[in-house]
Image 1 (spheres, helix red, strand yellow):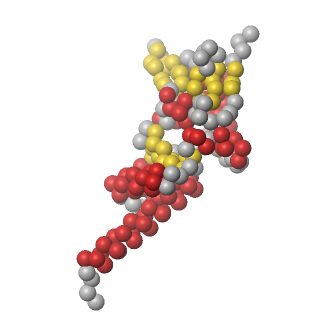
Image 2 (spheres, rainbow, N blue to C red):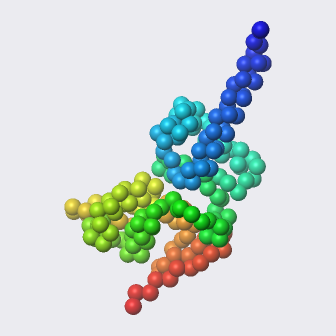
Image 3 (cartoon, rainbow, N blue to C red):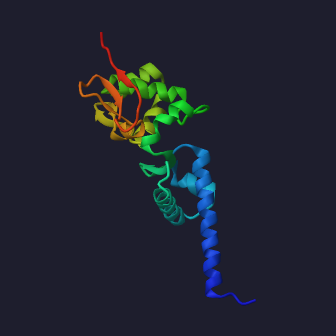
Length: 190
């Protein structure tokens, strides 16, 4: 049997399609940000190939004008809804969240009290909060600024993008971006 150049191209194209489907399935099932080492482990693919496939997957969703996109934060990727559809998450999502309840509570305290010292967060939330703070910093949800023997924590730009919110003009809380219908969160410090 003779293998022509055309046959080799078809084999390569078929392999790439299979790899693309495999990567897409990993993103779909995980529902959270994945680093390159996790993607390599889950797909058994080379990091260079994974980067190319992520790019192709992103282009595919753009070309289709899909409600889904591949989001990158701090060298990690996840499949997510485009911002204009984020309001649907609260209506439809059930089951486990990307962040545990404990992580959500830690992030809520940081968002409410910012800027706040990490040592205060640890006193309030316990030693597990170190892991929470590290995770949030890795995802650019918070900023850490060294102050003496601790860090000062405040919301990072990633927080506003991730949760599709912005600071209110009066500085007293957060509100959903105008692109998506949603809620306002008001802070009363009485």
